[in-house]
Structure formats: structure tokens, C-alpha cells
Image (cartoon, rainbow, N blue to C red; front, side):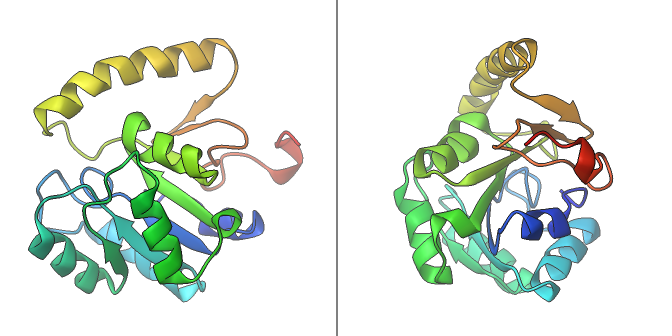
Length: 182
């Protein structure tokens, strides 16, 4: 996640980040925030971004504690890919859809939910391989979808992120502005 260019997001008009929790900010069921993630969130806040965790976790104490450590808001029981949790986050942050981006590690929860709401989405690689059994099944289908999209030229892989023009963003320094498609 630290390879996501905050300045590029701001250039695209993004003022708020809606972040997944498990395997995006911390390991699944984890309580420890990696230093690189902490630094990236601090940098986003320093650049004026509003940031909120939108999580499907059933552990309210964990998401609350992690959000407090990061100094950001949170919405628990986001029910992703449903739009309600994302809408709650937008309202909490006082921003519109066009000013927001969803960052997460799952196509069928984070990206699908963000796209259903019409929000820019950034798909990141999961932090770890340990995860909920149902997520492991979803990963099989995610690989199929990603392969199909890549073959059709609808996305490209750059480092840890998977991007699709208009839906995902280049990682820091990966592409000059003049090389970006309109």
C-alpha cells in the first residue's frame, strides 16, 4: 500500500480514502500495523486526505483500536460489497463519491462495492496468505477475473497493485503523466 502515490490520487481529485482493514492495513485478524502502512496513512493525513476504515470485521474493539492508532475514522460491519458501509463512511468524512477512492485487497468485496457506488477503486495485493476460508474460495475466482481483464487489456499489473485505467491507479513513479491514457 505505501506504493500508492497520494499525490496522484490528489491530482485526480481524491480527497478521501476508504480503506479495507484485513490484509490491506494489517494481516488478517492482526493487531499490529506495519510501520510502512502507518507512515503512508500519516502522509495521506498530512497531505489533507480524509481517511476511514470500512471493514466487514465482526470484532468492533479491534477495528476501533486500529483506527485510533492510525488517527482515522472507521465504519465496522461495512457489509461489503453492499454500498451502505461506504455511504456511511462518505457521510462521516463529509465528502462526495467523486472525491473518494476505495483501497482494498479483494475484488468481490472492496472493488465491487466501490464500483457499485461509483467510487474510484485501487486493488492491492493481500498482505498475507492467512485469511477467512470463504475468502480463499473467492481468491480462485479473483484470479480468473484478473486474468480475463488482463487478456482484454482492461488492466495491467504494476508491483503490488492491479490497475485498470479509470478504476485503479499507477504506483509511485511507475508511469509519467504524459504516458497515461486519457
